[in-house]
Length: 410
Image 1 (cartoon, rainbow, N blue to C red):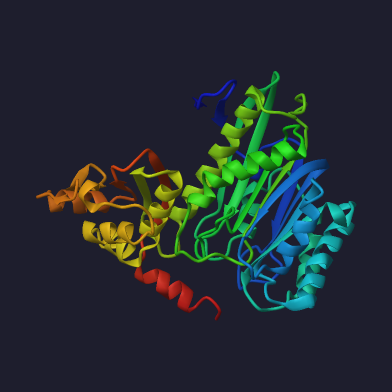
Image 2 (cartoon, rainbow, N blue to C red):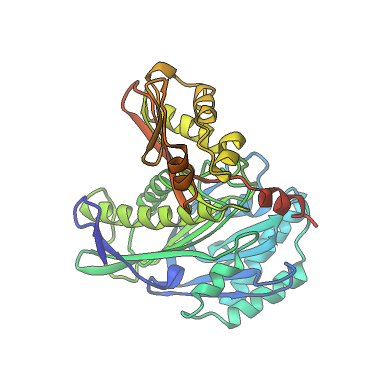
C-alpha cells in the first residue's frame, strides 16, 4: 500500500527484495566455516560503478575494516561490499589491516573490479586474526553464486547473535522514473551506535551526487540507528554503507528540492524499519520498547533523557517483568544530566498514566501490567519544560541476555 509522508513527490510503497530490490545489483551469501554454523560471507556487487557513502563507529578502538573502508569511502565511489560474520578483525594490529585490504583485493579479483572499489566489513569476536584461507574461498564461492535471487541469503550471512534476518525496501517516483531503496541490517547486542548501526548496507538505483548521498545517509542514521539502543555498548565495527548506481535513469540529484525530499523520506523509512527490527531482536528480548520524551528544554536534552531511560537496567528489567515501576523511569530521567523538574513531569505506560505533574496516581496496576505484556510497548515522559522531543527504540533486559553474552566468546 502506498504511503505519503509529505514533502514534494514523496509517495512510496513497500516492495520485496531487500537489498536486491534496486536495479543493477547482484549478491550472494555463503558459508565459509568462520562461524560454527550458518552463512558467514556476504557479497553485494553493482553492475556499474556507484556513488558511495558511509558512516562508521565513533568508538576509538576502531576495527581494521573500519579503517580501511573509511579510506575507500572518502572517494565517494565504490562498486562492491564484502562482509564476514564470526570474526570482527578488531584490535588485530597491522596484520588485521593487511587482512582487511586482502579481503578487498580478493573481492576485486573475483568480481573483475578495482580494489579501490570494494568496501569491507567484519563482525564477530574481537581480538582474533581472520582465517584468510576460509575468507578467500568464501569470497570466491560468493562471486560464483552472485544473483538477483539471493536477498535472503545475503541478509543471513551478516548475522551473529541475531535471531532473524533484517531487510526492507521501498519504491517511489523521481523525474518520472521508478526508484528503489533497499537495505539489510544486523545487530542484536553491543548496540548503542552513535553513528549508524552494527551493520547496515543500503542500495539504491537512484542517480545522485556524492555530497547529497552523504547528507541523506547522515540524516537517515540520525533519525533511526542513532535513536537505537539495546544495551548501551558501542561496537568497534559499526558500519553503514550505501551504494547508488543510477540505474533508475533519473536526472541526477545534485541539490535540495522535491526529488531529494522524496529520496530522503524513502531512505528514512527503510532505515527506521531496520532499526526497529534490531530493537525487537535485542539479545534475549521479549518486546520492542519505544521511549518517547516530550517537553524537554530542547531536542538534544530530550534525546539524552530518552537514551538514559532506555539504557537503564532497572527500567529494562521492570519492563521484562511487566512491572509498571514508574519510579525507575523518573530516577533515570532525573540523572540524565539535563534540565529536569519532577513537579512538572508526567509518566505514561501506553494508555495508563502513572504520574501526572509530579503527583503519583492511583492507576489500574493490572491494566498497566497487561499493556506491558505486549510485543511492542511505549513509555512516555512529558517534562513540561519546552518544545524538545525525541524517540528512542530499545528492548527489555532478560535472563537470556546474560546467557547469550556470557557464552558469546566460547
